[in-house]
Length: 235
Length: 235
DNA sequence: ATACTTGTGTGTCCGTCGGACACTGGGTGT
DNA sequence: ACACCCAGTGTCCGACGGACACACAAGTAT
Image (cartoon, rainbow over all chains, first blue to last red; front, side):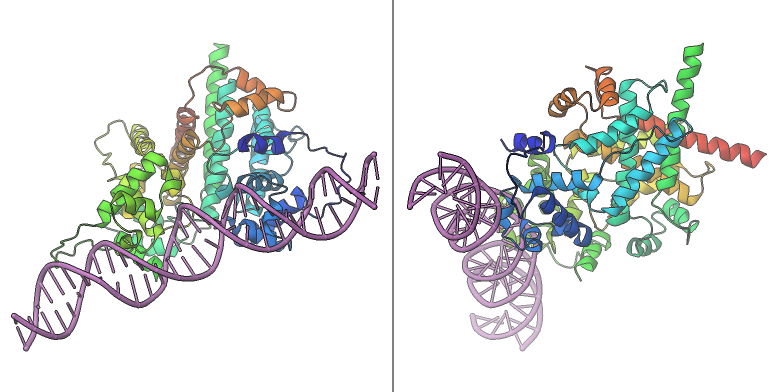
C-alpha cells in the first residue's frame, strides 16, 4: 500500500549498508534537487520532470527511489525542516524557550517559502516534523497545562507561524501590503469603514503580517491560563 | 489581463440588465455546481470537466462565464462564505462579539470543508470575504488597539479558524485522532517522550483540534493587551 | 422577409501533469 | 561463462487547464 510505503520510507530505519551503493541517484540527491526547484520557483514548479531534469535523468528514474510524488514531497519536507532544536539550554523558563522555538521555526519556514503549500492536505507527518513538536511540547512540561492543552498550545503556535508565512509568500489574506487590494479598499471605503480606517492608521508601518503581534498575544494568553491554574491549585 | 478580469467579476457591478438574459448557464449556477462538487468530493475533484458535466454542458462552455479556473474558485469562495454578519446586536462588548464572529465563521467553514484548500495561495480576495474581516475589525474599535493591531488581531483569529478547520478535514498536523500517527508515536515513545506523555493524558478526550483552547488563549491575550493600554493611558 | 451582428455553447487540439509497464545494459555472485 | 539483478530508459495512458475555430440561435436593421 502506498501510504505504508511512504510511512516506511519516512519512519523506517534508513540503514541499508548491505548494498555497496554505486548509485548516482539517491533519495537525498532527489530531495535536494526538488528543494532547489521549490526554493527557486515555488511548489507549483516541482514536477517529476522538473526535478528529474535538474538531475539529468528521466522522470521515471525517480520512481526507483520514491514511490510517488506525495512521498517525494514528504521527503522534501523532512529534509527542509531539519533537526529539531534542543531548547533546554535557553534560560528563563517556558516563555523565552517558546520564543526561541518559534524564531527557529520561522527562520526555517522563511528559508523554504513553499513549506506552507507543501504541508497542507492529507499526508504522513515525518519524524523530524514530530520532533519539532516534541521539542515545543517538552518546553511546556511543568507549567500546569495538561497534556491536551500542551499539544493544543503548540498547535496554536505552529499554526500562527504557518499563517504568517503563507501570507508573506503567497498572500492568503493580503489585506495589507498588496496594493491591488489596498486600492480596492480605498475605492470601497464606504463599504468597509472600519478596515479603511484601520489601514489608514498604519500607513507606512513596517509590516510583518502580524507575526510579533500574534506571537505575543498567544504567549500572553498561555500565561493567563497558567496563572489561573497556579492560583487554583494553591487555593 | 486575467487578474483584472477576475477582480472585475468579483468587484465590479454585477448589474447588466441591458441584455434580457436568456441564459441557461450563469456564473451563479456554475458556482453552485462547483460548490456541490467540492462539498461532496473535495477541492481536488473540482475540475472544469467535472463541473461542466454536472451542468450537462461542455467544459469550454464554462469559459464563456469565467475567465479561468482561478476565477471559478474565487467565485465559489465568495458564494460559500455568504454575507458577513452584523454583530452590533450582540451584547457584552468586544469579546462575546468576537466569539460570535468566530462561531459563525467556523460554521461556514465547516459547511464547506474545502475552503481552507481553496483559500491558500495567491489570489484576489472578494468583497464578502473582506466584509467578514470588516465586521471583525469593527468589533475591535474603541478597545485601545491601534489600526494595525486590530487587523493583526483579526488575522490571528481567522488564521486559527483556518488551521483548526484544515486539520479537521485534511490532517495538516494530525498529532491526535489519526491512529496511524498515534501508533507511530507509541512505537517511538522513547524518541518523543513529552509528546507521548501528553497524548497519554488525553486519551479518549473529545478533540476539537484545539479550537476552543486556541480561541480562548487568543482572546485572553488580546484582553491582556487592552488592559495594558488602558492602565498605560490612565497613568 | 432577408441579411448582418452578437453572444452562447461545441469540437478539436495542445502541452503538462502523475504514473504504469516493458525494456535494456552494465555490474555481481556463482 | 553464465544468469541474475536492478538502476535508469522509452513509450503510453488518462486527466488536467486552456486556446481557438466553428455552429447556431436570437435580435436588429434594412
